[in-house]
Image (cartoon, rainbow, N blue to C red; front, top):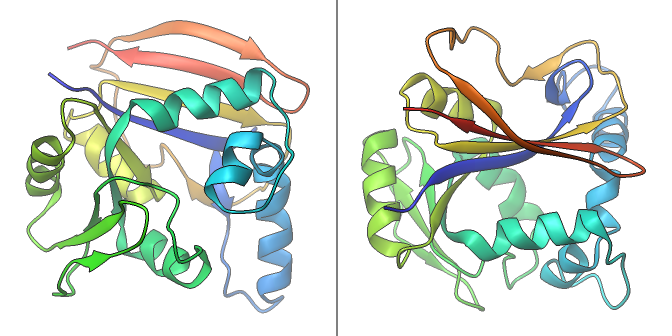
Length: 209
């Protein structure tokens, strides 16, 4: 059976994103902090290709890790907030090239984009989204794209098999905490491998059943 995984960049103090993009300092501060976290991703060749940023980009270990995550994924599940930001920011040919299932209360017809990406809007919970994702993934793995609330829901339900954390050397102090409020003490964790690169440290884990 296909595996369920997530692959994210995390600050050294455990946050997926700064505190809020809507604080009184304004969007520029939030975006600047977020870019510090994600800067290594934007330098990689595979990411530049998928986002239509043009030629060039790095081709080392970081690029290989990102490429492997893209290649293993047959469907993605994400939350409404992540989709809303992407709908404004993604190019016309969205970077997934496979079905994407958006968890939302909003009822909406599937949104078909060039390049093989279709967004489906799921109103009846994470297990329904996972069932539909498995049916459409062609035997490949299911990626939980985020945000933190969605990943926590899948972790709490025991539906995650593996995850990859790219730990960036930045501190936020507050923000979207990946593990906030979770009790995973009953789950056994296996460190599969760790890879150090100049800008992040990659940690790959498996959650044992």
